[in-house]
Image (cartoon, rainbow, N blue to C red; front, side, top):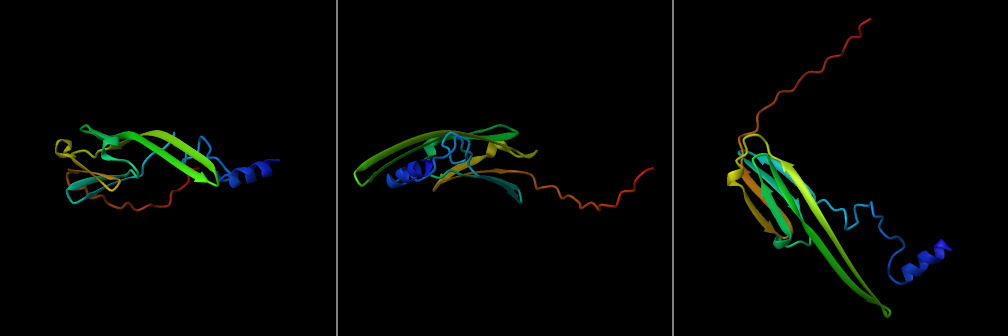
Length: 141
């Protein structure tokens, strides 16, 4: 019986599986991909926000973090062999990116182009670390 139901949904163009409420494809749970990197004395944070407009996104900045939040709204309409299907999904997102010590949040700038939000700000040069040698431990008896 389950196979017959799957075939019926496929015939209507709905596919054979509906997304699980816990899957990342669910509109209720969506977290945009974020890249954060520092090159020389500039910190850059990029968030991929496909399908969103600048008005759908809000950015707040403090001395120690950048908060990106907004809402994604998606609507689709399909008609296939006389069957009309309309879907609407909405989902909020909220991401906090910690800032390194010394980042100058007051001089941050944000741009939005082709679904990518880019935030840049001056930051002190990254401190150079050193590689530690790992030695074999001895067991104490």
